Image (cartoon, rainbow over all chains, first blue to last red):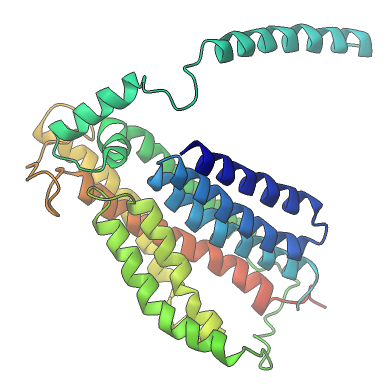
Length: 78
Length: 245
């Protein structure tokens, strides 16, 4: 169990670093989505399926989508 | 207040908070330990009201007033976004670009997943008191699933599927239904949001008293709210693409 938690935490660490190291905001929306997925895996491993579901829906889908739409708007169309 | 005084003020505050945090962290139970007094109390209360999902019991029974607060926060946020993102005077609707190309496999996957995601979302809402999930999670799944129609079909098809005034009403109705179920608790028993109606049998679809009803209200509110929220962003990004003349 400890190994799985350590693996999930490492995954979160790597995905978080990827978000920070991505400079282009529209690409960052994608890495943010991967980070959200890693977080939901961690919550699932820590036996919090309710939180994992919320994280999966909000952090992996809705937030990156809103970021992408905002980036597209700020740049003035596609 | 000059710079030196500000730095001293910050240093005193930071030292006090830092000391408190260190004391708190040192006294915390170790990671993964079996000492969980709140878990034991919450699960006892959940089983007492025939609720299989203890997290659902905490959210919609033991601390349902907090959830009502969260629903109102979500409602206020969506209203705020809608007010901020209304088309400004110098913006004109250009309509979606007719040349938007979608790969055929993406289109197929979108059409296959659309009904599946909607059913999964409805399942997560209706079984929130039995299995992990609930109104919030299921509502977000339904709301994001609806937008698969934009990925697979077109923006016009999405607009026909989700008439915005209907979902604006749905959001308000969901929030109002939550408060009304709370008032039933006042009228029929003694306290706001008290879980009083028949509890049913543990683990059944019709169990846990008011929790499935509250889940339904929250599901309606969250699904409608997120759909309205994304619609406002989509309108800005797609219909009002340019910054106007």
